[in-house]
Amino acid sequence: MLQTMMQTAGRTVFVLLAVPLLVLIFALLLNVDGHAVDLDAILAGVSGAHPLGTDALGRDLLARLAEGLTLSLSVGVTVVLLGSVIGISVGVTAAWMGGWVDALLMRVADIVLSFPGILLAIALAAMLGPGVENLVMALVAVGWVGFARLSRAQVLALKHAPYVEASQAGGSSVGYIATHHLLPNIAAPLLVEASFGLAAVIIGEAGLSFLGVGVQPPAASLGTMIKEGTSLMLVEPLLVFWPGLILFMVVMAVNLLGDRLRDRLDVKSESADV
Amino acid sequence: MLGRVCAIRILQAVPTLLGVATLVFFLLHLVPGDPVDALLGESALAADREAMRHALHLDLPLIQQYTSFLGGLFAGDWGNSIVDGRGVFALIMERLPATAELAAFSLVLALVLALPLGYWAARHAGSSKDYAAMSFSLLGVSIPNFWLGPMLMLLFSVTLGWLPVSGMDAPGSIILPAITLGTALAAILSRMARSSWLEAMSSDAMRTARASGVSEQIIWWRHAARLAAVPVVTMFALQLGAVLGGAVITETVFDWPGLGLLTIEAIQRRDYPLVQGCVLIIAGFYVLANLLADLLGLWLDPRQRHGG
Image 1: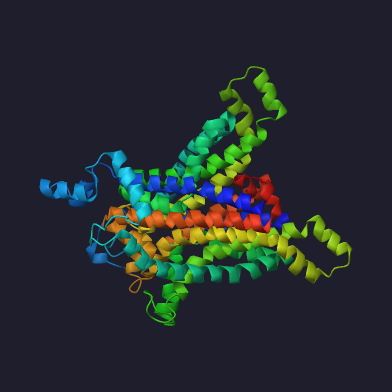
Image 2: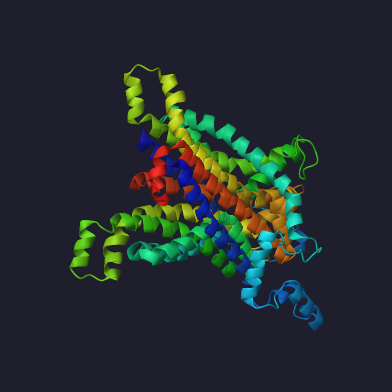
């Protein structure tokens, strides 16, 4: 039964990703500039030139969706990569060193965790100013903590494993032990954390952009497109429908992938709370 | 024993709150360049800039600014809004009831949806019913609330005309914001309820109860439910704080005049003292909710009292 469910989940991921992928492929094939304003084609309906119509400035909706989706994914992957590198370094250092280093690093993590993630990201992004780089910084500042706590908990459990102690007794350096013994053995839960983290970051980027503290016009983000679409919802509901649907499908696919990974790798989610 | 452990946990929250206040203080100093430039523009007159620096206490040494910020927090002096000059604390207190009302409705809605769904999924674990329930839960955590809100508005307010579009004055105006805010919570809680119930059912205590001839219904509802309640109640308490973070977006979507909307308005107007105050109060509630979750866990599950 579980296997059937996982197969169904796998198929669902493909179905969910089909629409966003089609958007990217068609946008590439048509090669329309999503920034080109056409005042003669304001809120134009579906046509050969504009397969999903145009927005309030006559810009091609499909091209903007593709740009927004690319941005969401690239911000998501960048933040998860940076966050995981910082978080894992902090977590492994804290667990390995112990004592005051561990206490200090974990208090910092606790303070970051004392904020609802989205609120801290909003406040940081607002204070740093608009722009993609600042948005990435704000999301990384919130996102590293999960990796830090998880890797610390995992390393604490492994620190006294016979093969780690043997390697230590054999004179291996800390760096060697970390990269050859610790990281390979804690990779599975971190991978699961990364997949759920990616979904959270994609929603976070769009949310911050929706609130006006992330990506700024004329650049397209799925969040800014939803915001612009909401104000024109009564005239053209599709302007808010499409970006939200694409965002939802990508996030659901990534979450489903995370679920699947967790089941496959048999990772207990509670391990993060040690 | 319980009292001592609780007291330790409460004391441990004090440095956390202090850390939160410190981070919030430094938020203002994160503004690239000079916050006064950001507020007035670089072409502002020197006298205006000086007055603004004085109003924000930016003319004082950093350590003095920090100590007076902390002192002000305890004394209830959270500074004044740059935009209308009113006290930040008073402005926050004005908006707090609207957010509390929205949060309460959302949490109740989440519980009402999540518990039966979690129970149903656990009862039919491994079946297509379980899969359907958990798919709904996955959908709930994946749907962005800044999209769900407008979609609900389109359907129930614009197309069907059943509910008001935004604001909080018309009857029924809380329904759509509460659904928007409560959906993700319901999804999280239903997953937790399902897994906790299943874990409780696989425990030795339940096997013994079964072997003693206790009916399945009583095992599920009386014995397993009590065990399963611990993580669910803890998660619910944690969500008390998280819901305030979610309220920032939901209130913006529905123009709900609460603390979340005040935060966004303050950010848009670059009213930094007000931003600080809003972030601080939401984070403060979040820390207290986490503390409450901790204490509830200690109270409900004696095993945790020995874990430190």
